[in-house]
Length: 144
Image (cartoon, rainbow, N blue to C red; front, side, top):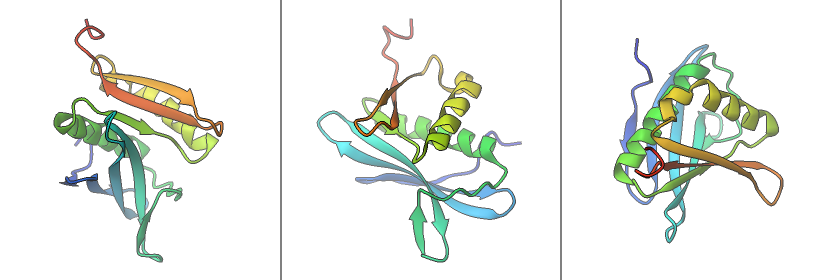
């Protein structure tokens, strides 16, 4: 069995990867890395679902498709791909609710083996009280 879903990517000002989440139904998802600050190489990571009714990708959908493990494995794979092209970047991400941030923290702990030793992941509380995660490639000094 694959460790992640097959992804299809696009580079440019915004880097995007698309894949189909296969669970209760088939959902087209997009992992988008959007530049936030070119001077500091800061990018925002968004996980978006395609919503047929609106014809748009949306980040506030709770699809509950039953394949959370494969989705997170696919996100981890796309983060690896992103850092291959942007090794000096920092990726930030945040859930749009407290429950989503708890899910992210839980998944980061469960799949720690996917990132530990490669990436440094920190989190801070933003000015509005929301949790923001930051991911960066470990320097050779940190990984030793």
